[in-house]
Length: 130
Image (cartoon, rainbow, N blue to C red; front, side, top):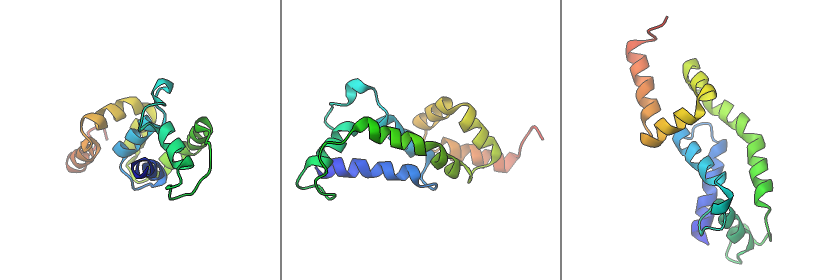
């Protein structure tokens, strides 16, 4: 039960503007996984079910939780959370994330430090197109 609770706590970092984008993408992939994965032992849906119904849960009993309703509530807030997170980045990063989020996610999946490395390169050499 405590591992399920710990996994659900990762969802809170979606609202944290300072949380790394790579971690946010990873959490989103877990939350919005394919429906056939919902019954798996540590899926988002299973974690909600276990934490909501276990007498050992730190939040107390809350019964059956509508997973799709929780996902929808997250979906509604995601745009604002990402806007707040992206405000800390230069305009070129914000534009790239908005226009090519899947590509950015793939780069961060291969190398979680990819964005930091790109920021360092741009700081050292400047914008070549200005």
